[in-house]
Image (cartoon, rainbow, N blue to C red; front, side, top):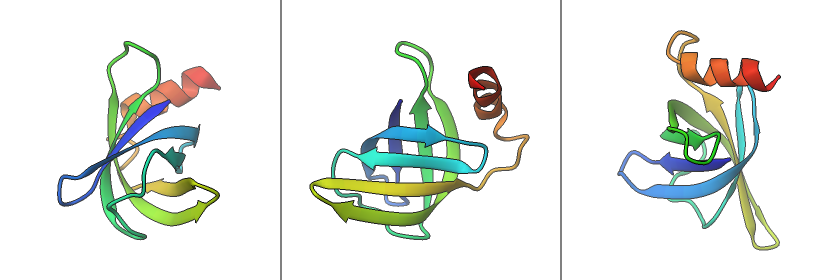
Length: 94
């Protein structure tokens, strides 16, 4: 799944989601991020090619770099009501 992460300055970092859960997501980033640990970010996820993206907000829980790969863990910061589209996809994928 393609993911776009926007920091508070409007800079966007692209990545691939390795896992998406009700608590958050794990993303392999295409480049070093402009955001840091504990930053609030806006996230857009494309679950299926050609489908509309799903928007959410999250907090950066951790960042890890190694062997030419940067990964990050994000925790959702929205209420369950605000995550309705995400929760619907998770229920369908289960």
